[in-house]
Image 1 (spheres, one colour):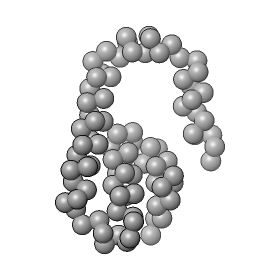
Image 2 (cartoon, helix red, strand yellow):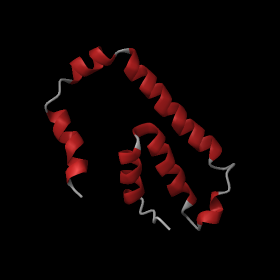
Image 3 (cartoon, one colour):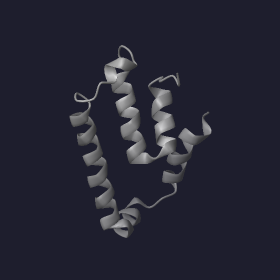
Length: 89
């Protein structure tokens, strides 16, 4: 349970961030634009979709977890869903 959350910071301790930024170039810019667009899309779509049927105070949690999945993949989805205490039922 604690291994995956600690993996990313441990990898970052040994990285040269200047080199990471210079080597990724336009790929990093594309990721940032895509992540920002996903957040904006989630904020626009949230009031339009009927997430109230999921229960009281659960809709925003589901929207956040789905946005996290689109930005960071399945492991990010699981981490956010666990943090926001979204039950599987």
